[in-house]
Image 1 (cartoon, rainbow, N blue to C red):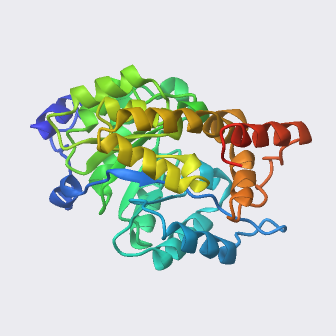
Image 2 (image 1 turned 135 degrees about the vertical axis):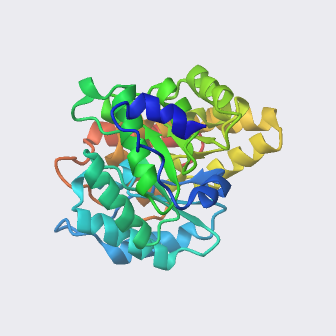
Length: 324
C-alpha cells in the first residue's frame, strides 16, 4: 500500500520507484521501548577521544536498567567528530555492551548520500538500529517532500531499522507531522525520537500512527511522564547519563500506572534536566557527570566550559531538588 502512495508522492517521473529493503520484517519487529542515555564522548586534554574513560562509563551504565544506549546523538558531540571517530566510538561501545542491550547509533549527515554511507558503516560497526537526525543546513528547503524522500532512501538502503530524530532546539527544524505519518508506514522505520517537548504534537503523532507498528520516544526527561501518558514507549534522555536509575524509575512508575509517585519524581527531575539540556547544554551535562562519578571532562571547542556563575547555578538545580 505504501509503495503505491510513495510512488505518486515522491517519484512521479519514475514508474520504477518502490521501497527497496531487505530487512522489512526485522525492522517491524524491533521493540525500542525503554530508557536510553545518549552517551557523552569523553576527550583527553589534547581533544582526542578518550576510549579508556568511555569504557569506564560503559561499565557503570551496564549495571543500570537501560534498554540500551544511544551513541553519537547530540550529547555525544557528533558534529565535532570525524566520520572515522564516529564509527570507531560505535565499535568500542558494541564491544562493551551486553548482547541484550540495544545499540542505537546516530548516523545522520547533511546529504542523503552521506547519511546512507554512514548508516551502513554504523550497521557494520554493530548498531542494532539507527537514529537519523533531520538534515537542516538548508532548512528553508527541508519541507515534507524533501524529508520524506531523504528518510525513505536512507531506510530503503539500511540493513538495520531506522528511528526518525526531530530535535528543533539544535536544528531549528521540526520534522513535520504529515511526514512522520507517511514515513511510519515504511517497513524499516520503527519509530521517532521527538525532542521538541510539545505534548499535543506527540499525542497527535501517536494517535495518527497507531495503526502502524510505530513507537515514539520522548527526547528529554523533563517531559517523560507527560509523553508516557499520551502513548510514548520510552525516552532518550540526557539526564539519564547522570541520574540513570532515577529516570528508569520514573519510566517504570509510568508503565505501572503509579501516577502519583511518578508525578513527584518527575517534578524533581525537571530543573536539573533543563539545566543539562536547553539551559547550559553539553558542558553542563559533562560537569554533572563528574559530580555523580562518571567521566564527563572537557568538550571540544567551540563549546566552552561553564562560567563560574553558570556552574554555581547548575549546582543549585541539582542540590535544591535533593540530588546533591
